[in-house]
Amino acid sequence: MLVLGIDIRIYFLLFIVYSFIGWLMEVVGKLVQYRRFINRGFLIGPYCPIYGTGAILITFLLKRYINDPITLFIMAILVCGVLEYLTSYFMEKIYHARWWDYSQRRFNINGRVCLNTIIPFGLLGMFIMYVSNPFLITRIELLPELWLNILFWTVLVLFIIDNIVSTNVISYVGRTSKEVGKDLDNTEEITKKVKELLLGKSFLHRRLLNAYPKIKLIKVRIEERKKEIKRQVEEQRKQIKENVNKQKEELKEKIDSFREENK
Image (cartoon, rainbow, N blue to C red):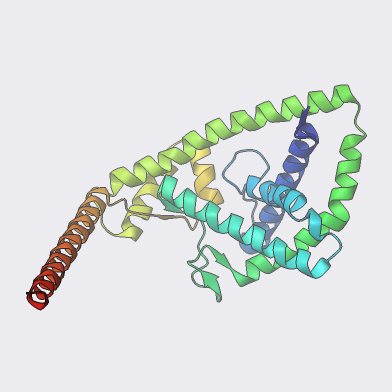
């Protein structure tokens, strides 16, 4: 199944493998930190798509730097750092929650990325390009056509179902945060209330809370934002009107001056 000369079956399975490896890294990290198993990630299954996405971006975007390890290292940091930042930003805007926060760590950017998390991205980028990609792609390509198709379609269907179910669960967090925010102003109070509601829901909702115990819910101030935008528009309109009047006065003075000089 070729798209622009690329067999998407191979690279989708590569994406899933790296997503699983990322999930495994997250689980081990939390096992060391909390001394218990935590099913990390937004999805129910054992994979964290942000890792798979990062690996695929590195695979396609950094191929040109394969003969320059230093540049590859730096570019891998940039690619994965931007990916992590944008993922944090859009997940917050869509679901009204801060899923991770590096504000307490040094050299962070808006708490979304920090130095001691993006440096390993550079090392992982080099490992992907020099070690794991050649090994994994070769092994996947060796699969018989029939088994490649069976594996691809089975994993794809399961992945899509997981995304649908998990998105519904995550959306509940955003909707609940919005509703609770109507009555509460304090971020900590909103977070506490939403967590209580999640604990009373299904296993899937509790799993999400368990995966992100430090989640912070963001108050959605729609009316306040509308008023602020309206105020800014009014100020800009007023400023434009003042500038136009000022230019008219200056033009009138120049015309009067010109008439006086040519009498």
